[in-house]
Image (tube, rainbow, N blue to C red; front, top):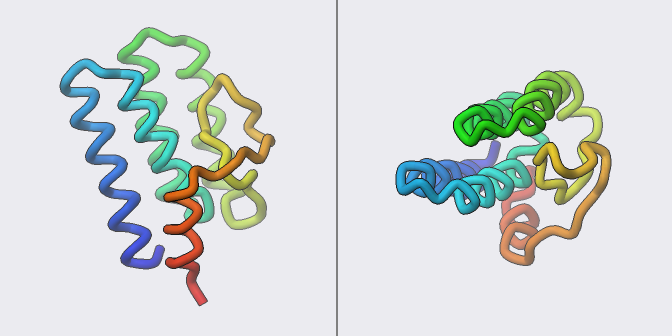
Length: 116
């Protein structure tokens, strides 16, 4: 992962952590979704994001999220290098195969940090 992309990815993970500590679980999930978009092409970071979503799903007692994130974490390890649906937020409430519009700021980050 490009060092600048990694910086943005880690910032989203940190923001998720801080939101979770405040009990703002919706914001925590939003930051994890953004981290997911940034990490999709990197198997370990991608899977780690799903594991963080799984833990947050467990904390919020959301069985659908826990089951969905478990299967997505495994898929992330196996398929990240082959194909990912661009912009997909990674949550269990959306299809794992559906491309989604990229937020403008993340699209810019991904374009500017594209590894050559």
